[in-house]
Amino acid sequence: MSKVAFKGSTLLNPVPAVLITSKKEKSVNVFTAAWVGTACTKPPIITVSIRPERLSYDFIKSTGEFAVNLPTVKLVKTVDFCGVKSGRDIDKIKKCNLTLEDSNFIDVPLIKECPISLECKVKQIIPLGSHELFIAEVLQVNVEKSLIHSDGKIHFEEAELICYSHGEYFSVGNTPLGKFGYSVKKVKVKIK
Amino acid sequence: MSKVAFKGSTLLNPVPAVLITSKKEKSVNVFTAAWVGTACTKPPIITVSIRPERLSYDFIKSTGEFAVNLPTVKLVKTVDFCGVKSGRDIDKIKKCNLTLEDSNFIDVPLIKECPISLECKVKQIIPLGSHELFIAEVLQVNVEKSLIHSDGKIHFEEAELICYSHGEYFSVGNTPLGKFGYSVKKVKVKIK
Image (cartoon, rainbow over all chains, first blue to last red; front, side, top):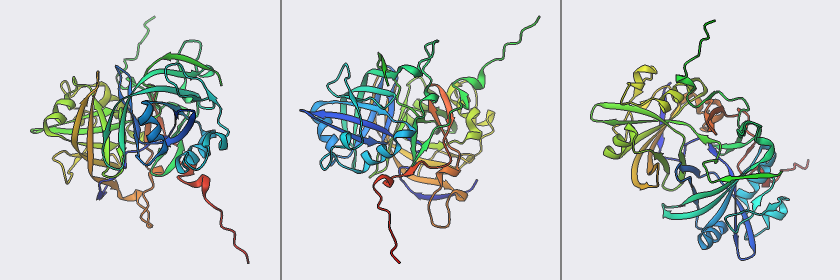
């Protein structure tokens, strides 16, 4: 391979594309974020970067609460719409026919059409430039029943989740390429 | 959909799975990270969370420099191996037959077999628990020539990048489901 150099930019790809719900007084808003990531295992912490101009920035900064809802291939158009349009101009939940359902640990509803939802509480906000980094603890996760098999394992590959890469949305393969640790797993040989 | 509640955990999926190189004195190390994310557009900033027990934590904390290399489907076994094994016990670059190439802004080599590499400089480190969050500016990006078409656009979908979801590695679809903004794009009608 031979590489061409460009000035620094956000070329980390692919990244998640998620629908984030927030609530201020009686208003519920949803917006799409791709500048999100897992930050810590114990305690479970994620980061979400938000532009201060966003309505959701105002909502989340005021209440310190939000939910991350993982969308599926079927919801790609909604994901795009909620990333382009502002809750100041339009009720995106209504326009996109999204159904809200109660959460347990926060006063923010989840999106029923998303198979996985994370209830989050902000711990710290760090201004970085165009975006501010919200560091938040995941208090509870909610997983669609049919993705949980009888052995208790959650089958994410059946959820048809999406990702975002350099301005476009993509599906995720439905056959794992490998499992964490598979490269060093010893094959058990049975000697009869 | 009907959801089952679990205690908070790192269920944000899919996330990137990247090979991170770092260098201390004359030693170069590589490790796999999935707890990474884009944090800011201007300036371009990413986050990488690292466990303090990691050799790469020591390297990156000492020098404040690292490179993020985006691996492909062909490198999945290497990605897994570099996430499981420690540079304290084995020279992972050598063992995985990775080729190092020079970077421009940092004193850390890039991985030639990865089509995209980001040269990063740490700005801030935030301890969170099991992991510490490294907030770093992307000083330069390096992109495999053949991915850049004659119109200047970088075709990430041709790179065969991978992602990580709930303990397994997955490919990314090679046909975009949509382009950012497509949900509100007006169709131009030509009147003859």
